[in-house]
Image (cartoon, rainbow, N blue to C red; front, top):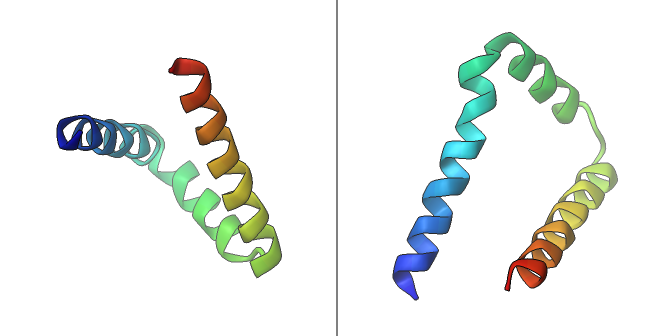
Length: 61
C-alpha cells in the first residue's frame, strides 16, 4: 500500500510541476488570480477537485 501511495504522490508532483516549468509567466498569472479569490470560491474549487479525484479513482478501480 505504501508503494502505491508514494507512486501516486510522485506522479502528482510531476504533473503539478509541468505548468510552472513549461509556462512560468502564465503560472504566475494563474497564482495571482487564485490568490484574489474569496475563501468560498477556493473551497468550492477544492471540493470539485476532490470529487473529481474520487470519481476518477472509482472509474479506474
